[in-house]
Amino acid sequence: MRKLFALMAMCALIATPLFAQAQVDEPAPLVQRRVVINFEDEVIESGTQGPLLVVLSAPRRSGHPSIIKVRERFTRRVLLSGNEL
Image (cartoon, rainbow, N blue to C red):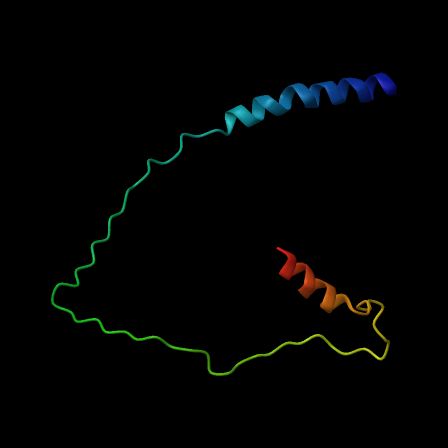
């Protein structure tokens, strides 16, 4: 039973490329299309358009206090360090 299965598997593996090669056809030649649009006698005017509405998104406020806290006298120290430069 195993030998029969192995023989069938090997035949399938050998026959697969043969069928694949038989189905390969030459690709159709590429046709290059060229479209020419002539605007010589036409006047084209345009303008800018804006959105009809403005969508604002902001982070939601949570009921929890902020974990990040600014140190006391931090802004004063930053301003003083800028003056030292």
